[in-house]
Length: 316
Image (tube, rainbow, N blue to C red; front, side, top):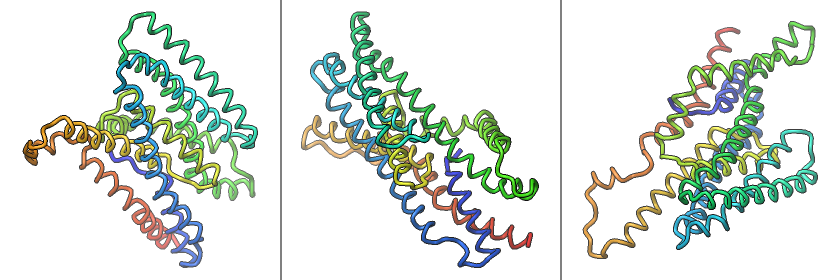
């Protein structure tokens, strides 16, 4: 039930096997160090972006004197930003230059802003509560962001499986390239794994680290898409899993800090501090889940590298 990166596991296994088979000079350590730096920085950036987006939502909408008017003003802007990011992100997955993606992203932003504003007006006329309007508005862009990130995740991580299999394909077919059949097999494995064993990780990421509502989940999805888009543009292979969890951590820890700040501002100055048990109960981020996740991240590459080296040595 701990989310870890298949990319990290594959890199560790390949590096360990290569070092055991051909010596310590075989792996390209400079490239591995560059990749590892992206692994360390990308979750932190995603957490900072997710926290900043949630802070913007709370300041401009949730704590505004008139939440409905504030929502009408700011929610279409956020939805337009989501549409622009998702449009640009989708275009970078194909053979589209960045200078061609910019105007198309601008068109997507304007379309998202206009559609969100139109829907908000319809929701206001229907007499729904502000919280219900917010959840209904955030639903479609959240689904689009989740599907697009999952699409990019599969497009990236299937290569971790099919890459080693390509050796078999080339040897068996006399040097032939990887066929779509191999890629389809990798994709089928992804789908089966998600259906059979994905529920535990969905519960872990969605509720056991910190509770997410549509607004917070959209902040996480937008932060994830921004970081993945930037990493793709820079040519850095980062982990979609780590980036998404970095966004979850950022949103959760910001909520915890913000709730404590608001409680301290509302409480009398001479109020006694809370007992340790009560302070622990009021935490919005489960420390045990965070520590388990970070521990899994730390041991993934060394353990798969040692396992790959051991198997390569035994087979050779």
